[in-house]
Figure 1 (cartoon, one colour):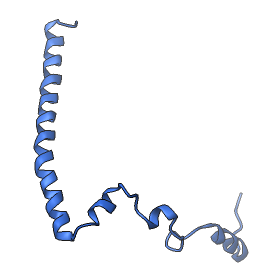
Figure 2 (cartoon, rainbow, N blue to C red; figure 1 turned 45 degrees about the vertical axis):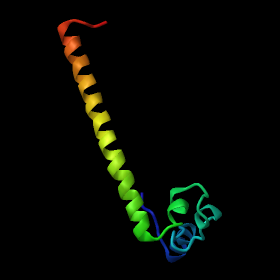
Figure 3 (cartoon, helix red, strand yellow; figure 1 turned 90 degrees about the horizontal axis):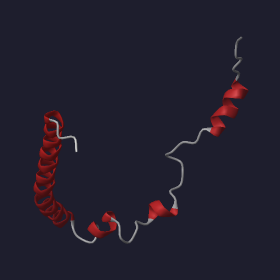
Length: 88
């Protein structure tokens, strides 16, 4: 069984393939959502945006790390309790 590919079939097939660079952006892509991060951060200059993001990171990462450590300890203690025979 063989497939015959001609110039005509290639032309027909190529018409169905859309090039993403040629597609027009939708209305959602043109204007950001009023409550989106992009719209909120675009109110300030780039230097201020970076300072805001840095402040959020400095405050958020330690809290997330602490919560992760507590979660890890809790899972470890549950595993040791199950091994010790406290399956309740």
